[in-house]
Image (cartoon, rainbow, N blue to C red):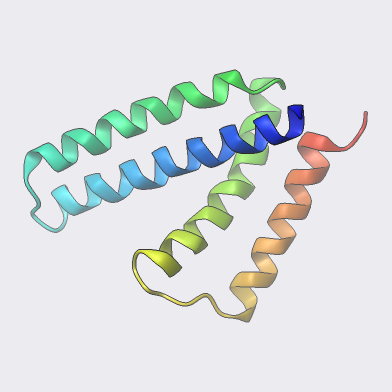
Length: 108
């Protein structure tokens, strides 16, 4: 169960970071209302808090999160921006998931 909670925390952090960054992008680059940028900033702040609930230390958590960020960014692009990942995107994502499993969940 601890691993499922850890994965859930990574997914929540990823949605906050990518979603927050996306909203700031919409405000700053695409001219959306300033409140969109403010909401994005709030999500980015929450992103900074969520990983503190992980059971591992800072360096390990952020190293593993880097892999989650890559995978979730590919999925975000596919679902939100309608950019279909190609074969190499998928292979790279699988490599990242393998690295996450080793870094966070391999017995020590």
